[in-house]
Length: 309
Image (cartoon, rainbow, N blue to C red; front, side):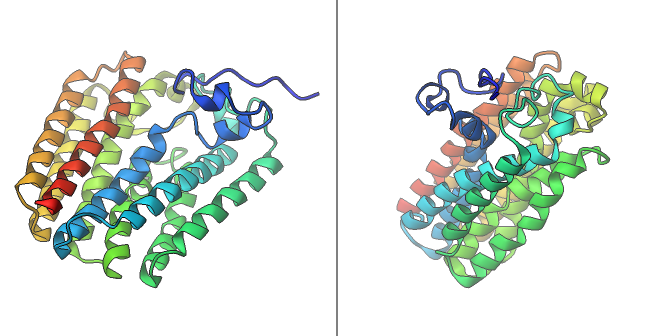
């Protein structure tokens, strides 16, 4: 007998259409792809858009390529879903030991491993079709990310900073926008990538504060546990590196005042996050984590305005 659908997970958007309107049989798969938690694909997408906008500035174009931005959007949703599905397949035993994750579709029995593998293949196919719309260099760059993505779920078992490996994967879009525009990479794209990695490590450390007690019991390693009582300092260092690397990328790209003004607003927001971190407030950590979408969109808007000006 099929088990009843689980309620929305603690960090899901309340009242999301995936939980209200989707057919009951489809809902576990939408949860497997984290559709009801859109913050993930937003955070995967934003470095792509930043990179496309910075490439437009460097090339003297008035705005980032609209088709590229649309393709990045579709690809981010598909590949974030594929990554989460793969992660849940690998982590299905660990997920049963953590309060926030034990109701995920695989450990709760709503989706079998075989069905999850088929769903993973379907999402990967969508991502491949999107990737093939770009130039050959961008296609090769996209394929190069798969090794990092495959490695990440295993890192939390023995590496105290698995968020660094997550950063390598989630920040990859900072290379993709540049590669799609120019068919090559240079120091500007690498600096933007390094800044995006630092940003990912910072915000995912905040996210990991939600699970710090369960992670300790289950033996799961994370940057939140590694930093311990000095988590504010750790996140602050990550965000400081973010701003330094991004500022250097802006200089090399020839960005104008609007981009730097946006970076200033971005810096204020990151500083606000650090000031509000409370290791004992899981709900507050989730709110801070989610706020990175809006901060990233403000930065993208400023970079787009820079191109127009």
